[in-house]
Image (cartoon, rainbow, N blue to C red; front, top):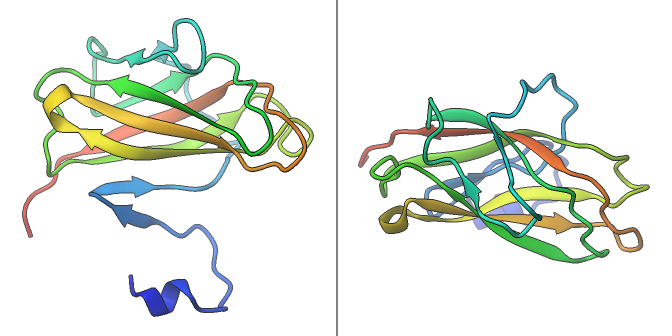
Length: 151
């Protein structure tokens, strides 16, 4: 994607940006997401352990309730099975659902910051884009990892 495209005034929706081989999706959906395979154990900043999930390439996650202040951020790790994450894989957090009312209870944006292949984990970022209201809900999202290769 060129810098010219990013600076254009042409309206567009659902843009995907590729940064460090990680796809970032910026939208909340109300899609029918299957029940969670993994639930975050204690709070929104606790690592999520997906090391023993049956299918490490595609599963769903539910976080604990986030109470992030307006304009604030939360970070947590998604730990994957050893050897499943390499420098050519492409991780996706998509179709995420917020358990509260978007706008009234903050505006959540979930994204992937980095893939840490040597430690088999993904750093995730939850941002509250609302300028006045704190988050007050959990995030339920689908996760997938696709194998990649050198072009």
